[in-house]
Length: 143
Image 1 (cartoon, one colour):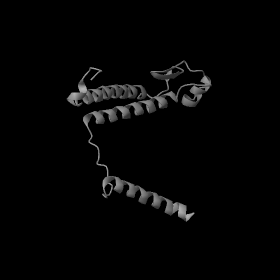
Image 2 (cartoon, rainbow, N blue to C red):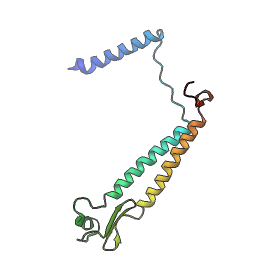
Image 3 (cartoon, rainbow, N blue to C red):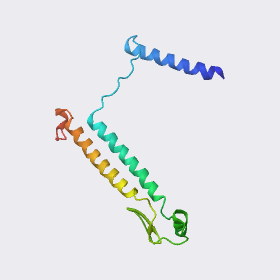
Image 4 (cartoon, helix red, strand yellow):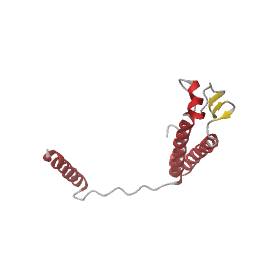
């Protein structure tokens, strides 16, 4: 078992280094240099983060809503044993006995994250198109 646990990975690593050296002319493999972070990539990461955070916040807000047993939504969230007056998914809302149960900050947070995500996406696309090489900007499909 020790041969498989230690010997096999060592053999695979030695073989890989040997193949790389043979391909590159006896040089050791060079580590990949870190990629340059362009403003377009930064904006794309911000957009992705805002989309994910918005999804998580929306799922959190939806956890207040009734699904299988509507009469239990008010009981578990507000302590009332009654059917909710109203509920909606967007804006996230659950009203029990005239009182809003979903925290006040959920819907403004969703709005801020949605605006951030869309703005960062548009910015990322605009920066990526602006930074493309001049030869890649042709619109002719034939060349």
